[in-house]
Image 1: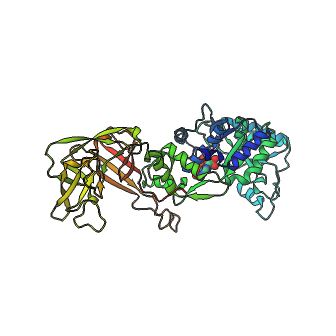
Image 2: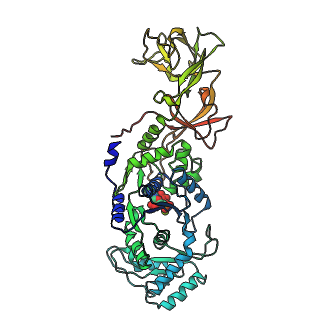
Image 3: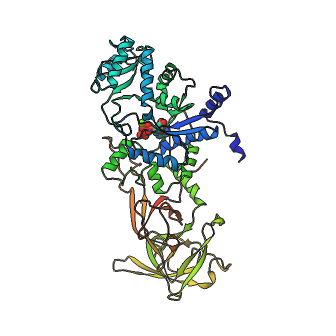
Length: 554
Ligand code: ATP
Ligand code: MG
């Protein structure tokens, strides 16, 4: 499209283009630096696609780097799930999979370099004292009594830290910057701490671990990252980032750029909350289809294309804002609308009997897989005397403007014939058990019949040929009408977030559907075969999204 060319560049693209033009860098390298302490969510997808997209746009490279410098919370399980998610999104890191923990020796040497330059010192103050000495936003901090240790003493003590001579918290290494800086992050921040912890990759090789603000710029510089893109909360840390790369005298120092996090309105994304939902058994793991972790979205039936479209629509901003979940739904509908077959499935069945249709006979009707996309071809759908229809498609005493089945009314059975309702059978409780009708053989779909028109069309599934399946219908895990959080900070759970339809009936074309296959069930929404619980004997479908939308693209 022509107007794609005139879409203005986002602010990060503008920075990169200027850097290339002015020769600050000759190529672009970006990275996605997750900490392996949980599953990725939709917000991370934005960061992944932004970083990957920029590298691609400028012919550069994109790295996946695990920021695994904190041994307490990190696990191998999360490493694997994160790799899977990044690959699923199509962010190709080629052979550039890195672990920050592989740079521990380099980081150690970098710290020694700072000590030699008189830019770092070992401090014996406790964590509490360090906080007290730090000052506040309005008051400057005061110097640690250990600030003026000699280089030799600092080298000796830092070596002792590394060699395990001290207990956790007994000593730290601090950058020597400025205790009266207006930016608190610059008031001699801690850059190394003692932690006698086993690391998920390094084992017990180290008992000192670098702090994020010191480690991250080194990781970037070592890999040759040119633009280190992070979220807004790191804006105040940028002077420290710049200080580290400057003092370590990297030839091509990376540049930190901040952008706004992606938030979804009324949707729970915080790891803390999700972990609790999982632990309390309220959801079925981190990939429960009601969650917005990438694993959950994939299981629910979202495609990488739909997520890419969503991230593009959201755009890149410098101010925090929140996006409606309906926009994500819009993106998956748009993606699947033309790609996937439209099949007939009945979720709340009642039998329809065509009394004048020959018993025992089956016709195979030719049906287009997707009327808007002829490339998907056609399929055969069996039709016969006994069908399932939706219970709501019949009413004995209909209100005005009800165009579906009621005694005396004629409707079209989708892809098949006109039928006229003749009545119904009820059980002793007055519940309708069968609807009866007669059909007109002249009115077959595609036969060119033009005799008369009907106002309603209903879908159906042939009783003897139906595939029986379970369908799971979802709503937001929290009650958004009443607010996401209760007064005590707990989640205000929506009791209707999951509805299980034990037995729905679907036309036989879905019989061989495999996990992750998706379909449009006419009128009922887009559905995807569940990847955890579905088997060949017992198909389980997740509703990805209903067909109706409250979101309109302006
Ligand atoms: P959370 O706080 O949601 O658990 P996190 O920031 O702890 O996320 P990290 O593994 O540290 O998760 O983040 C990896 C990268 O993803 C970072 O660069 C971070 O800035 C980015 N990121 C995290 N959350 C979002 C979000 N909501 N929108 C965009 N980027 C995000
Ligand atoms: Mg984090």
